Image (cartoon, rainbow, N blue to C red; front, side):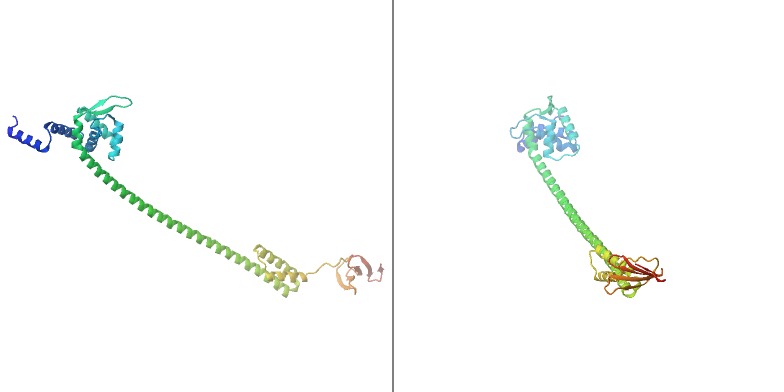
Length: 305
């Protein structure tokens, strides 16, 4: 059954108002059908590929490799990980539908629209809408990128703040640790000073209270002085105890050649000679400077010159 004249007249009148010819409408329908065959998820890629196979400046149909199309697609619109799969599918459908020529070449085959007439239709039908879509998509992408950068900046700020807080905490902790070591060292030093002082006090007490322990007093004073020297200190009490103790220690005068214990001694008026008596039943006179025996008397009255 044919189309009625009234319907055809209405269609031509509608075409006249739109400014399109019947040929243009047929080509547009054909393009829409091929794009629909690519699937809804691949529609944007299909429209972009048709647009990229035209030269808007010269109104020509350039030859392009799949790699060139893929690169230009990545610039025009952000593609997912399956972008290459989608491009392969679209090019295959375009070539099978007769919309695109596949021209063998080296190092890669190239693709081209089958007719110059398609260039004007594609640019008129898709150029403005695609550009608008791409602009909207780019605006959304830029907005998303701004949001992402804002989140990253905020995260970076919080991270730096946390790092700053951590560094401050570590510095305080190290400072407190240093103070603890300092005070511990000071406490130990004070204990050592106190101990040395106790030894010096004991040395002075022995010197003043125990005349029979002068040697012990001097030894304690020496020990106290050594402890203070290790601490880079000088203590007056320890110094006095040592000096006074040394003055009370017996000093070597001369050697007397008795065979027993010396029980009595006497000095000559000039201090040059020492007379000594011993339980060996002898008395001897010794020259102090040389230790030489000058005379000896035993208890039975014998003299020895």
